[in-house]
Amino acid sequence: MNLHLLAGVAVLLILVGVSAYREALRNEPIRRSRTRSSALPPADEVE
Image 1 (cartoon, rainbow, N blue to C red):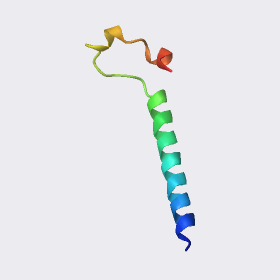
Image 2: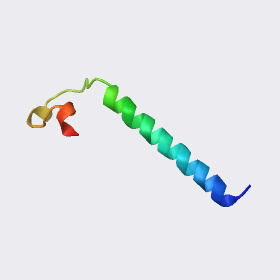
Image 3: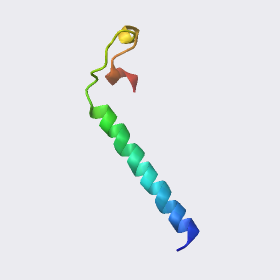
Image 4: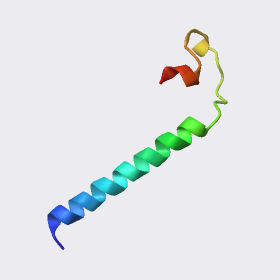
């Protein structure tokens, strides 16, 4: 198998995984304690 093709497929899989991970984090409700985050804007306004 061509090494360039193999590297391209690996990079594509990594990008798909990172994209899915970011989407899951965006849709997950935040349930952490908000002791220090009172000065931070809500998660919807960060982007």
